[in-house]
Length: 115
Image (cartoon, rainbow, N blue to C red; front, side, top):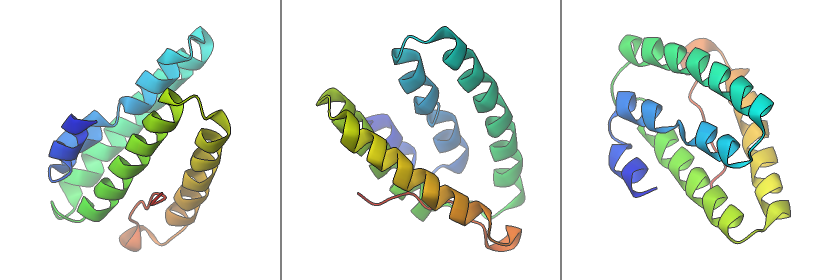
């Protein structure tokens, strides 16, 4: 998590660091889900690289800070075995992402839950 905090200002490196999603899935020890998550990560990482190349470098910094807070909170909840709180955080994050992705492309900026 500390490494992610250091990368918030670098859009390309932060996007690569968000492989944390796949790592969390891998820890669940479900091989099918791990393969699917890896495929999705690959697709999303290619999109992220194109997005970063086409936009201002600092455009996503606030979203990256919020994402890092959400990742940190999720890891904390999982370490504490607070499954219901982790599920609730993921549900709120999913709702926020759906809302952000439905905005016009020029206004799009991913916003994560700030819990």
